[in-house]
Length: 407
Image (cartoon, rainbow, N blue to C red):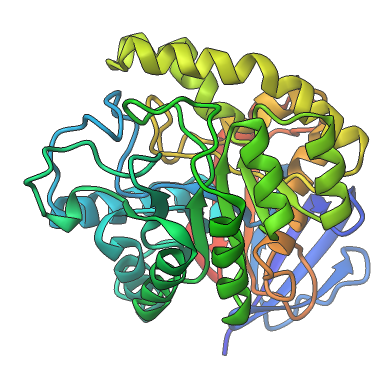
């Protein structure tokens, strides 16, 4: 088993939120064995990888993406028919782009036909290169809700969309168990309307508290976390009361919702980039005017909620909704710039994409920091993001599980 020694002049210590200087990361097999001061580190018998002059971080984690699409401007409700085979092949390409951008772990939040399950399994077998994946399979929606289809009712092809619809607690329990049966890692449901769904009001609650409670309780019984798409105020609050693990987007939350998150230990995954790209680039990408208008509606409120969550110490995990209009896989590190623009320090933003993200995924014993015993997921960037956060868009070294994928 080969031993590697990664020489670092600057290494982000996500446990303490600081930058360690002049250290060596020792790797054996797929694990980190130690992190030692460069002055006393013994390199004999090691393959030496020189990362001095670069900024080294734990492998980044994107907690919210959709791998079967990549920046197309059309909405989920109106996009042209795509076969499951096409979506799977595109997904393989997309997750490889994510890995090359430094994202060694990702959480997919709904893709058609369990293609995300198949891609995760193929990567785990070693058939393809890609990040560690935590997958949701089909989103759970109410009838007519965000992630239900708006195709002709006589079409019955189950693979045309990333969601499945049901109504009432009993049907929601069935949908959760069906997803688990097909190999998902967590459950994602749609509490409110969305920007990219035809005919839904973005702030409107679309699931009852009882439906959300049935989802969360069933997932918990199987030892799984839950995530909810939630823009609207009442939907956010009922999802938190129901026991959801993370609120995705959360753009129209109010003070009561923030206090509920604090009380319940709920994590926010803000995905600022998703709305920002639609507003700035949606017209160019071919996004419908109604979707651009809804993006503006939620974005105008989101900055306040993000700031208040920071003030109250709510856990904020990095997520991008990659795949949505003009929000390309491999380019999602732009989210760091947006998070810093909304008040985070660069080190806080890096913590969101490493330590906090790993804690949300319940993977903190495996990833999220550079420590002995963790997977050797290490990435590096040219320049120093503490001086210019835009550096995070230029990943020049990727190691996942001790194997170098980009150098």
